[in-house]
Every structure is written in structure tokens, then in C-alpha cells.
Picture (spheres, rainbow, N blue to C red):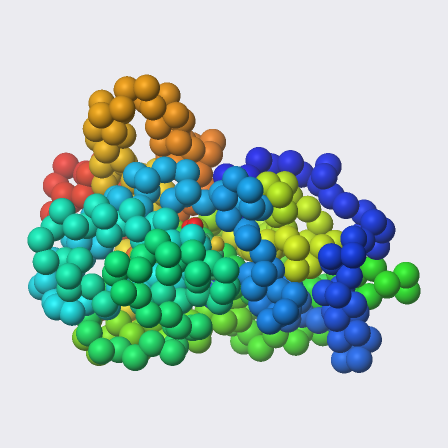
Length: 399
Ligand code: SAH
């Protein structure tokens, strides 16, 4: 999704009408399943629509890029991947420059981020040759593109984080990965939590209904008060167990960047994007990307719960600027003055407050606790995100 213009519902296809041939098999499959076993939870619906082996969005669509459905940060500017590469080098040095070091990317898309990151990181002698590159990807088309771009680094592929064995100190990276994890949605009706489910109308169209909670996360929800909404990714606890099992045996760190929830108690955030426009999430399953905003408070809670150290997240804007995005832009613009306007525009999309800069957050965790504070993150809760990262916090802007 990313820097998609907020087109609202104006481009929304009407539910139950105008279904193309293409969407037919997936809608039929979902209808059959609902008629056989009852309404689907949203995680069940998202898993079918995104991951079904034959018709799932992430199995068959060429989603990313100008000709796909959405454009991501690494596809906008090489500066994004380069700065993340330098961040990884810093973390590798913090870990004592282990060789080998396992470098995992979750959902690497077209491989652009990792290619930019490793190119920039090759400035640090010894890092790239130490890297044991592992890619976690479910889309065979994207896997092929990753293989093409990253073949010189000899990557290995896995289907899931939990399938990777912890053999060495490990660094994990994921841009716009957490937002594809299925999310369950709830609302309080007459003093009790109800779950938002996907049902079939008599005319065959899909629609949302509220029903008895089915996703196994009820104990994780706050006490119900009328009018309350919330959403939660049921796979997050298991995901952080897997991450902890990977980072704790030999030490390591993870960095995730994602579109963040402002206030998960205020709204549900499931959205579908197709061809750079927001569309109705129920209208074209399998043909549109489905995501939700990431609740980094919940992410931090689960990560701390499995013993990982977690500083406060920062905005993508502050993160990239502290890591040197502006200086990198100036160097690129000086080397290619004709490209300067386009370079500036792409930098603005990454860090501009009305573009991705504020809405996207960088979040990190690490193990062991004794690892130095990560570059680009405030060292304590009291240090402002504008602080330049002085480790002792002296002279920080406060608050
Ligand atoms: N990180 C890339 C792509 C983000 S889109 C970028 O910034 O450009 C999400 C990515 O996650 C895609 O590569 C998609 O195929 C992959 N993906 C989606 N669900 C996944 C899953 N369950 N396991 C692994 N990868 C998944």
C-alpha cells in the first residue's frame, strides 16, 4: 500500500456487481466455504485472499511497482535501502562483527531493498562476505525476481520465519511485512466483545457481520466498554516466539518499518488497494492487496514478553534523517545534477510529513540487553525523536 493517495471510497466497485471472470474462482471458493462452515473471521478471509496456493494475491499478482498495485519505499528511492544497509552494518559491529552473520529479510518484494542495502554495506570491509543471506517469501514470481537481483549473495529461501534454524548471530529486516499479517477485528455490543466476520448475502455478495468471537485472542483484549473497537493480529504472539527463538541463542536484532496505527481503539483499519487505488476489501479478493495498520504498542508488548529489548518506535522521517538521508540525497544530486529534482521528490515522498514520513514508523528489537542502543532510535523514552542519538542523552530536546 504505502504512499497511495487516499482516494476514499469513490473508486469502490459495487459489492456483488461487475465481478470479472478473474475474481470468479476466488469469490466462489469463499462463498462455498462460508456456506459450508459459516462466516469467516477476517484472518481466515485474509489468509484465503492473500495466500491461497492457486488464487491468492501474494501467490500470483505482480503487486509492487508502478505497473503493479502499490509502490513501496525501496522502489521510490535507493536512499531507503542504502541507509538500512548502513544501519545493519552498525548493528553487526555492535554484535562484535560475527562471521558468519545470518541476515534475514521478510517479504523482500522485488529484492530492491536488499540489493541497495548490501551495495551500500559493501563499504564496510568484511560485512558482505560474512553475510549468510536468508529470504522469507511466499510469492514464487517475487522469489524469481529476488533470485535474479541477489544471486551474487547466494541467498536461501524459506516459507516462514519459524523454519529458519538459529545458527549464527542474526539480523532481521522487514519493510511493509507486518502489515500483511492477518488481523482480527472486534467491537463491543451490549457489554460483550463481538468479532467482525465475513458472510454471504442472499444475492451472493460478501458482507461484514458481527458475531460471536472466533479468533483465539479474546484473553488479549481489554475489558469491554460499549462503543469500543479494536483489532489484533492473532499470529503476532507466535511470530515473536519465532523471532525470539532466532535472536536469543546467538544474539541479534530486527528492524521493521510499517504503516502505523494512530489509535487502534478509534477505528478498524482493514484496507484493500488495487491499481494504486483504495477499493472495497470484499469486492475483489485475490486481486487486491489487503493490509491493516500496524499496532506497534501490541508489537512491543509481545516482543518484550519473549525477552527482547524494545526502544520506542520513531517516525520513518526521523529515522531516515538521523541516519543521513539528506546528506545522501545531496551526494547523489551533486553526482547527477539533472536528476536532482526527481531525487528530491522521491526523498520528499519518504520523509515528507504529508507522505510516508509520519505515518510510517521504524521499530526495532534486540538481544541481549547489553547490546549498544540502535542507531536512529532514542536511547530512553524521555529523549525526543528529534534527538540526534547521543548515547548519554545529554542535551536532548526532552519529552
Ligand atoms: N519489502 C518489500 C515488499 C513489501 S510487500 C518492499 O518494501 O518493497 C509484502 C511482501 O511480503 C511481498 O514480498 C509478499 O509477497 C510477501 N509476503 C506476504 N505474505 C507473506 C508471508 N506470509 N510470508 C512471507 N512473505 C510474505
